[in-house]
Amino acid sequence: RRPGRFLRMQATNIDEWAAEHQASFAPPICNKLMHKGQLSVMFVGGPNSRTDFHVEQGAELFLQLRGCMQLPTIQAGKLKVVSIPAGHLFVLPGRVPHSPQRPEEGSLGMVIERERVAGEMDALRWYTDFAVCDQVLYERFFRCEDLAKDLPPVVKAFKASPECESGARTETSVPSERPFEDDLTSLVPDPILLSSFVATHAAALKDGQEVDVMATLAHPDTEFSVRLVGGPSMQEVSGTASFEHETFYYQLGGDAVEIAHLPDCPPSLVEQGECMVVARGTSHTVTRPFGSIGLVIQQRRRDPPAPSA
Image (cartoon, rainbow, N blue to C red; front, side):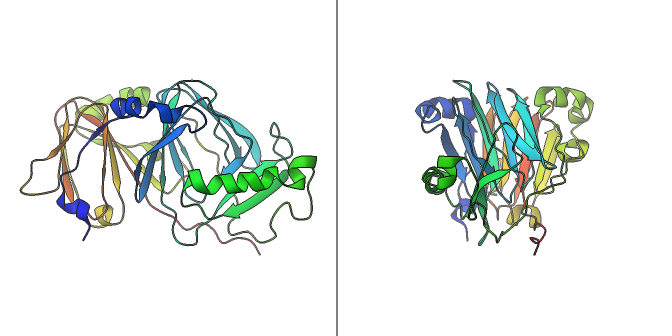
């Protein structure tokens, strides 16, 4: 049995938590992990830039809290730079190369991604020309358990490589065997301003309904479930939904939401600006009063297409 099922859950105020860990968001660290389980919830500051592209098999969710970030991506084989200003939410499908750039000092963004399963690999890639990205200069696949520990050796190997020195490809620049292929077809919807999206669906939310963000956007990603939930309402989370995946709750507005998971313990309260992760294997009930609006996120792994022979 999981210990988390028998402990009262506590919400975290994001602004207070970020202030407490402010030193972690300045160079050279620039990031701090708030939660690591089936979901990883991390916060990334600036200024920070990089020359590599990261490719992972799972999707990533970006919610920019302060400042603006730039996300160069390779979509359908072409470079597209996605701008994510403060207050905007963006979901990037798995297997889409991307290179997060956070040029603004004091910027802060939240990133959510799922755990890697056994045998799942990531890739780091450099192009001959970062401004065009039409030819791969160097690429390596690696097992990623901890970004802070597992990325630097790959970067170090590239900096010591003849490709880095010359800017030209060699016979060993790109591995001949690939554990997965890039997503070459998805065109990703632009980031949404969350406050405007809430306003558009205000009537449904005031009526206690749910709004499926991914379905509304006709988003190509199949891993993330992103829902806005209004009050008054009550949701019971049990069965497959609770036992296979963690659930991330973020209260956007209105009175506190109550999350109850123990019959003999008072419910946990999630106030505006607070978040909470409910562990997998935890059946729970969510009660929202009138005017409450929250963001509810889950992510489940989807098998990618088999690599080409």
